[in-house]
Amino acid sequence: MSDTLNDRLRRAAEMARQRQQGAGFPSPETDSSQYEAEQPRTFREVEVPSAAEETEYRYNPAPNVPEVDEFSPALPGDPKPKKKKTTAILVGLGILLLLAVGAIVLLTAKHSNEVEQLRHEQEQLELANQQLQLANEYDNLNNEFAQYENQTSLLANDSIVQKYSAARAQVEKLLQELKNEKNKSAAQISKLKGEIETLKGILRTYVEQINELKQENQQLTAENQEVKAQNQQLAQTVEHVQASNRQLNERMTLAEKLNVTGVSLTALKKNGKVEKNVTKARQLKVSFTVPQNNSTPVGQKVFYLRIINPEGELLGNSGSFKFEGSTVGCTALKGIEYAGEEVHDQFYWNVTSTLTPGTYTVELFTDGYRLCSRSFTLKK
Image (cartoon, rainbow, N blue to C red; front, side):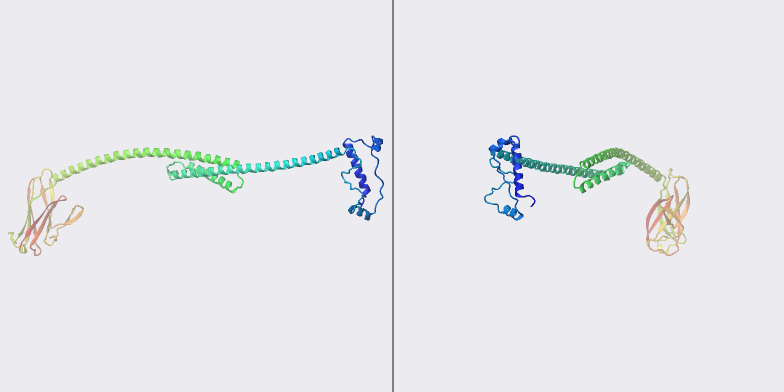
């Protein structure tokens, strides 16, 4: 070893002198005579031991050699040991104080970190709560918009719907971004709040326009109902007038319509006399009278005769005429000059085949009217 025991003892003595000077003890250089008188020099030269001896001294110190502290050696004959003890205590207290201060600093820093962490967590909770409230508010806006969405056709210009759709897409984008982010941003929450306020304003304008249009439509509907009521009343009046006109026309038509009386059907022999046995008849005679009618226009009138046998067949085939939109065949026809006076006339139809006994029907027509329909029984 490079340092011998003697060297270490010298260093310990030097450290002790320095401590005495720091504690106010007289320096050996300033008052060496007094110090030498009171404290005789006790150090002696020691032979330098070999390496083996040094090792033996280190691990097996001699029983007669007192153990000396390397850092705080106690010098024999120290006049003030209490001050040295006080100094050691003060140094120890200073170290403890430094340790306590360090511990307090560490605890304070830890507490500050915990407080900051709690503050951050509370802020995130508040931002998450605001985000949830804004999301609920957005859902309510969408539900309200859905109530009016089917009334978009009432708007003359659907640009407001396009604005609402664009604002809604922006809100949904911000909500998705906040949902994906672990730490909420107050700036994003503020931006989301602003977009929802914009959405509210658009929806408010939209609802106001819809309500105005609904009121206008209600007013127009009321006016239309009033007009419909007036039209219905007018239609009823027109219908009443038309009915009156129809009745008047019918009366005029009935007044103009010719009438026949004294209609008869007779079977005749070849010589023109009455034949009681219908199977032997050679002619059928139909007689009739047209009474006087001043309302009927005068002039040539064409009369049509139809004789239906008991089998329901039309006798003869002398042409046809129009009646009630249909074409009707006739047994015979003739023209009669009508001058408004009473007219007596008759039809003669030649039998072409043997007639059967039974009920025969005689019908007379003119001017599109059926003048009569009479039934007659001809016997065998």
